Image 1 (cartoon, rainbow, N blue to C red):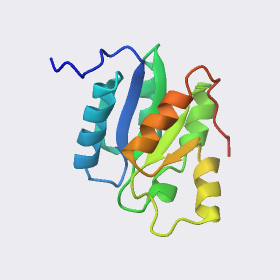
Image 2: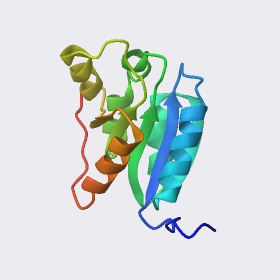
Image 3: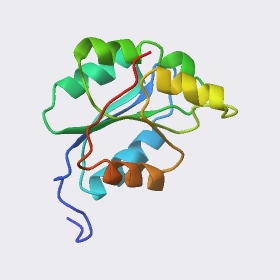
Image 4: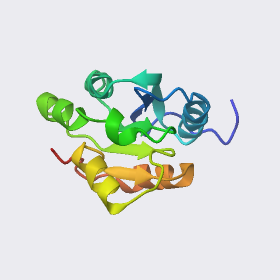
Length: 145
């Protein structure tokens, strides 16, 4: 074990890409980065329906966040139903979106993503780590559409 690797004591992160996104390399890199920073990662890999993220998160007690990657610009379409799944499950957990989930980021796209249940949008790995660290001790919630 590398001396700089932190034991997985910061909780569990569910990680995966959206239903139309085949990009596995960003997920692999995010998994490594999260594990090196003390998180246990449940890697769903590619092609996940919104309900898959929610049901997987429900299966774990020490869940910190759901981290969804989208690199093909179809996040708005792929994440339809996420808010409904979160509301149905009564899951109160941050949902972080990363990657190149949009072709041109606009306030309308941001509203749509938040309406779908996304609580945070991170444009790089540093922002993801910062977001996870600053959420510590806060009450997670999502916006229902």
